[in-house]
Length: 111
Image 1 (cartoon, rainbow, N blue to C red):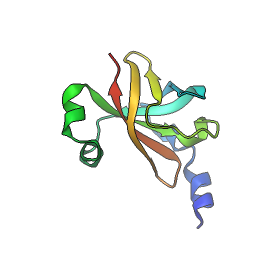
Image 2: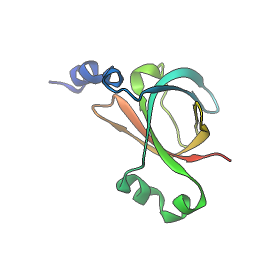
Image 3: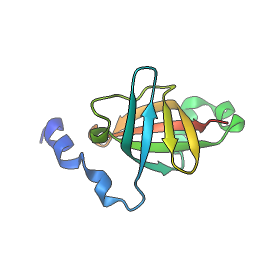
């Protein structure tokens, strides 16, 4: 099976999760509403990639964004995610996962 076929198979995987929300993603060139997302605790490897000082300064969370709902936009470090009920978060680091159907974004909460 090719990566394109795997992407097609998993691109709507957000439907299998009960805790999916809709966020707004914004950077210097794009604003996209209704992005399918899931908020979760950061993994150890994500925290290690940015250093301990970031976690000491502010609250961190990981947002999993589904690529299919981003309208061909790739999130960027410094981009903003607005999660209903917990304000705005700034992307510190990110990577693609799960056959390129998801973006895992480690974020710090804006004050």
